Image (cartoon, rainbow, N blue to C red):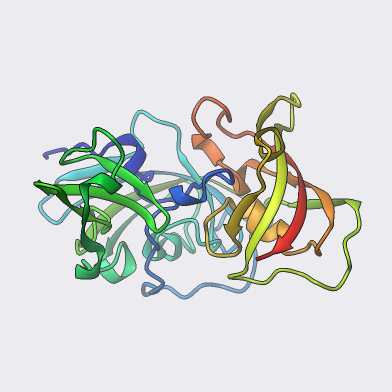
Length: 294
């Protein structure tokens, strides 16, 4: 069985979205919204049942292969992949494909492109002036754009061709998945420090301006702050540009409100962590202020 290497920043965990609040432009290409053959259940995981249902916090080991048997990603030798089922953190077919699994069970899935990374979109291949790219860009360079990740595929003279399609777009993917654990949904807590106007709340798709300071819940160590940079953080709410704890917590705030978001690791960066600043399985505390809806 042949194995191909995918650069660390483009792996998902070739499966999952993990976008830091300070860097909205690091969001992945939008995952296809199509749903595989399994329907999502409306019930939630209970502490007494290890069967996967919507809302469960799960950990899985997996191996992903292409139709020719080539391995494109695997958790072998790493920590299990952790995510919340039905929260939009995974490609659709993987998310729904584990429904009904029991702890210790192994299941095989075959996902068509529509249930994984979609078909190749020719509109995602564009020519841009080479001067618009970061210094040192060359064929194969990976770029972060406001629309997601892109790869430089060709350079001719002063023009570069970039491709925003995921490298697995248009491919049928096969997964062998083993369920390691299944726990009740994690709980997000929003603690109001200063009330807002009590009437103007953001809705999905709104672009917001906020100040924030992020710390590790267990040690209180600060890992990032827009206040230190002297510039509010701007992003679009509810579309996966930020971690789940932000998407779900900020919509509960009104304009002018200051609050603390107590975010469990499953709604933050999970077992992967984030660089050297946020360790794996770290609960997070964000002190945030909703300045305005843009």
